[in-house]
Image (cartoon, helix red, strand yellow):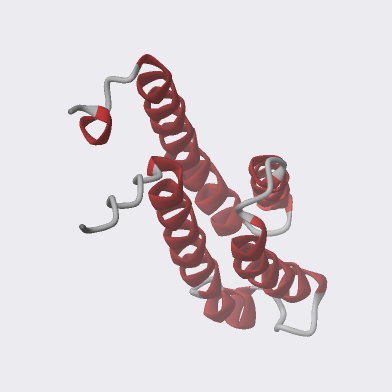
Length: 126
């Protein structure tokens, strides 16, 4: 007699997608560092520290994705990125683009949760 297969958790897979998106976003923000060095006065300026803080925050947010308030932390990070348009236009544009990506991801999460509640996911079929 074999043990039954463990039930699949679609939200666990979604947390992986969220973590991957945060890492990709950190990489894209890190690519703004040469722009800060050449146009923003260097990494030792406020803009440089802002970019470094965003990189650390985006990577650090991966550790809290199991928490129910993680989405709010991500939203605050994006508000900061969009508000940083004043300091560096490229960072604001990155913020707007990734905010659109996160809006789509959260819509997908809501759709998966709705289908899970209705029992319509393929993993829930007999």
